Image (cartoon, rainbow, N blue to C red; front, side, top):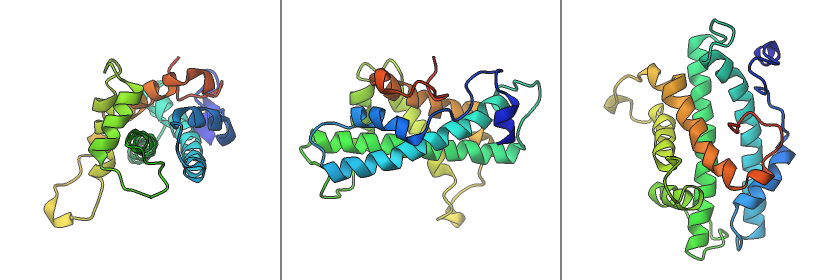
Length: 200
């Protein structure tokens, strides 16, 4: 990725520095005990690849959003779609971890394949990773879900035009990145040493 190489030191760290394998330890720590082994394996396998993808997107979105070179880095519609994709990836991370914590809380090991209602997994995620509410996890996750749902094209005759400003840096990327912080900090010792997803 050209723009990732363009900013090696300013700001530092905005490359996908980790590998998917390096996310395994954090994901294993984040999944509750008592979950079926195959369910755990699949969840870890899916989410570790999503997390590395998020790093690559952050490596382009942040230099563009912060204008580190004094000018835009990306063609604006491309940045908006990339920010939307970052939100979709974050939604998957939150949905996966929230769902597995909800199931564990009701004594289900996940092997039944039960579908979890969004309000239930958001509540479980918030209890586990932001019990005091200090990190505003629920608000940020609900914003991530709003962004993720906004581009659905299944009811064209019943929806207004998309306001592409809703996919901007402050409106979409920052809440998504902020939602990730309490998740990473819960098991900070297992987070890869090199990642641009954790705000130091």
